[in-house]
Image (cartoon, rainbow, N blue to C red; front, top):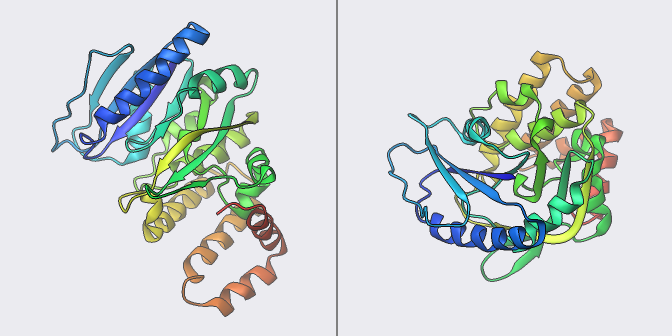
Length: 284
C-alpha cells in the first residue's frame, strides 16, 4: 500500500479536484499492480472544518491539529497514522499523472526513494522541472545538495520507503515551513539511503502566490533553522555545515549586493562549481 499524506491549510477548495485525481491514479494502480493507496488529510488550519468525499475507491482519514503547527509537523502527523509501506507527501494544490503510482512503485525496487520528472503549472503554460537529463540525474548526488541547491523541487515527485524516513526528521520539527523536505533529503543521504530516478513526467506543481516556495524570506528563515538544527545535532561533517552557512549568506545577499555575492562565490570554489553545474544543467 501507498500512503498519500496531504497537509491542508485552508484546503477545502482543493479537495474535490485532488480526490478525483487520486481516484483515477488509484484505479490504474489497482488494475496494473493489484495494490491500492490510502489518503491521509492533516488539517493544519483548525479554524476551518474540512469536508471530503468518503465514497472513493481508497481509504481516507482526516486528522485535525488543535493549532497550526506548519507543514513539517503535518507531514509527521500523517506518518504516524499511515499504514502503507511507501509514502507520498503531496501538497494540497498539486496533482499527479494517472500512471504515477504504477511507474514509481514498479521503479523503486531495492532503492529507498525514487524521484520523477514533472512540470511547474502556471495555468497559461507548463515548465519542465528538469530540462536536461543531467539535471535530473544530479538528484542522486549528496554534494549537490550541500554545495549547490536542493535538487528535488518538491516531495510530490517522490515515492519513499517508509522505513527509510529517519527518526531525526520526525523528532526535530521545523516550525518555519519551507525546508523540511530539504532537511529530509540531507538526513536520508546521511543514513546511506539509495536514491534513483524515473524519467517519466508524472508530477505537476501548481504555481500560485500562496506557495511557501514563492516566499524567499520565509524560505531563507526555514533554511537558517534547518542548518542550525543540523549543526546542533552534529550529524554531518563540519565542512558541510560551513558550506550550508555559506549558501545561507548567498541567499540573503544576492538580491541587493552583487559584489558581495561574487566575492563569496570566488572565495568558496566548491560552492561556485556546484552553483554553475546545476545552472548550466537547466535546473532553476
